[in-house]
Amino acid sequence: MKKLVLFAVYLSFTTLVSAQGLQGAWNATESNDMGSEVEHVLTFTQGFFSEAIFQKADGKFIGTKGGHYSLHEGTIELIFEFSTQNPEMVGQTQSIPYSVANDTLELHNRTWTRIDNGTPGDLFGAWLISGRKRDGQIVQRDTSGPRKTMKILSGTRFQWIAYNTETKEFMGTGGGTYTTVNGKYTENIGFFSRDDSRVGASLEFNYELKDGDWHHSGLSSKGDPIYEVWSQRKQ
Image (tube, rainbow, N blue to C red):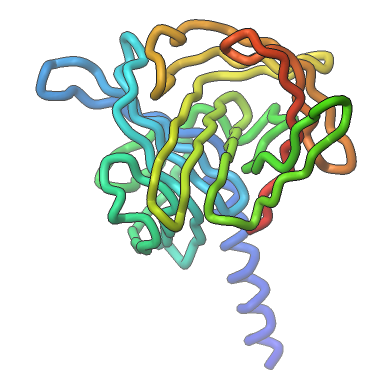
């Protein structure tokens, strides 16, 4: 009995270490048929993942996919909530072998190089928009429905995605690098599905964590004032 308990503890510990070793952002590149270099950025937080694909030179958006993940002794199980290139994947599960050694990840027949391990990451995690300020009042938004706007952040990379798990509809995404310094959250846009001309722009916002929620205020990419509340995603 003692051996069985010790084995269970060891298995739980090694699974936790593997999960922590996977968390953060990863990068891989390839050349497309036109000879352009294509960048893949893969982000893992606690139980959620996203992959963004875009041209490295100009940030032209190519595709994205993501959802939930869990680890099972050398296999990663992916449950897709969005996929721009193959919408029929939404709701499906894939189990794929993976391995992590030092700062290299082998996954999807591709070798990934670590960008960060989730640090410094004041805002590391997956977040769902849960409220907006209107006329001085926070108006709450239900996060349990199929229509979601999610932000997923590693230590240095961010991506937002708007999608519907019920209809498999994708509404838009954008991402790049970010910093959090002295209450200022700055996004440097590396790709934007709705408007390639925004690539290269930087947007600065005020941010504050209140009772675990991320309060985000400033001006949108269109110059409109915004005040949003984001809640850390649990499921």
